Length: 397
Image (cartoon, rainbow, N blue to C red):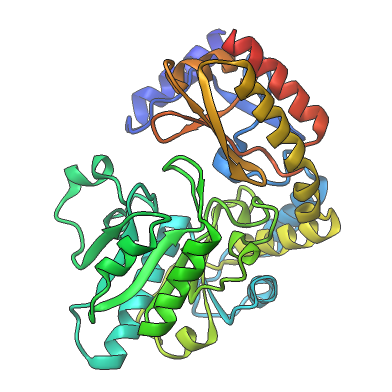
């Protein structure tokens, strides 16, 4: 306990306090479990906020990164490097899209997508007064650009003025989107499954309707797959379930399974008529270590049949969560897709339940103000689901 207390005190003394961290210090992981500095074991149903899709201690993943560290970690984008083209090809093959720009994070991927949309519109008419439609209750990141398209005043208000030309519509309400479209609209941005806003999947009618509006008006459709992408929905990318390909897609989180890496991906039309040399750049984005992680993740997804596994285990998780909702008056409903699930809580604060869960050796997180979020490693089994339910019941009781 003294070791943990000292580590926590050291962090609080030197790290800017922008997170109210849980009072445990994690030290190592194996499979679907994490261990703190006191040796306590936790079943992980948070996966570093939907990042560690392959679980902890995957030998093939670890060895690939160790091998790359010994070869080359960084070169800058002034030169080619070995894993870069391979990683980009794997993303374009999995998505059916055309070009990739690697970033260091999901937020940076959103920034790039915004620039793509504005440049695409600028090349059409030479004006720079174009508008982007975003969704209420969305979350796209913490930088000023990403905040500008994040539909939550709580995150935005202290940092205004943000970038201009942003309008908001209601998610899954096509009429509200139509009402915001003008001749200045250059893009519509939305999460295929809203994550931080409370785990809301897009309806097929809504997503196809937005796509039709974009095609009719030559508006770019930007789909944020940062949290719901990379197999989590039961499809490599959640939009593939609907057959609605975006013009620009943003990915991150499980793209590197722990190594910080994101990307924005463009279809052919957008890639040919947007960013050119000098328009955008990054020092670290696409470096050999990050892109080797991406290559390895795609290889292991294929070898372990991760997407198929999610499709097999997700119905069991949904069934068990539905039974839990039926058994407890403080739980209202479940919603989600694949292994991104949320349970709505009433008359109790999610944080209270999460703290109890930590005491009982279970890591879960919240979404919005009243939702328990379940985004485990994609390798979980029915046995892990049973263990989670047992620990969560103990926490609820």
